[in-house]
Image 1 (cartoon, rainbow, N blue to C red):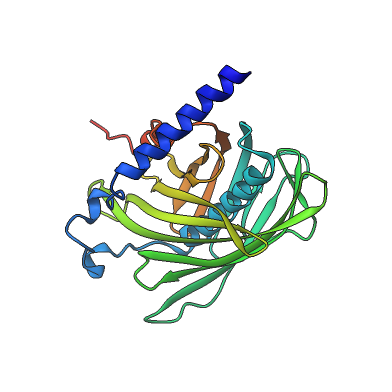
Image 2: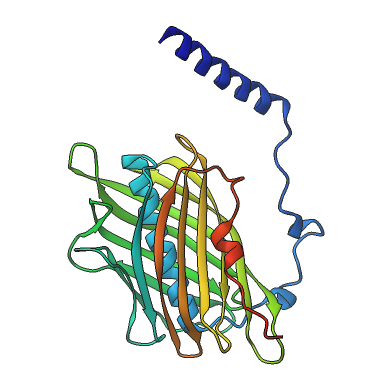
Length: 280
């Protein structure tokens, strides 16, 4: 036992020494020339995509709170998302009493953007055998569809003593369009961003997040949200990966929400696998 403790302590001290001698990490290479002109970076993100992405973010934030409470215990659960941009916009964990989220799109404000309010179904939901309830948050997109800010999402997760703990989460994401596949508006949309988790108003974890979405163009589309913990107890990755329809007026995809104990340097398997197959 003493040897094990000594070895662990040595590893921790080595990590501290490495951090102390290193420079702060630079911005991703995409920003090497500074911000791109907004008019060049704008996307034509649809109402259905804005609603779906807000729902995905809400479920990811709930999972981050769960990880903080229960640790990074690996699990995977099926999920289903549906959005028509009007009356039905929802995301549900497909397990018994699974968490269900709904999105309400507010009227766009010309020249400014649009708010989307995400709330949880009236009854508590279960995520990996843990009760999650009262999730609510506002996700605000700018009018160029290249920035989304979530100033605060609140939710409750059953703690170690069985009593609900209150968490708050905030995120900022910037969207870019990637490859274009021939004429039309079928292309990739991806983003980078940061997110913080707070308990009772005080920050406890920080996550690096990125996502990629490919619209369907004669084949199924795909969407992947991935978050890696940067500040907290141990490495952890949350991945929400779905496939299905992503067309004007319809976003309907199924997939899985997965938690795994890997570092941020691990291969981005799901992100890399989300791509449109080129027809020879």
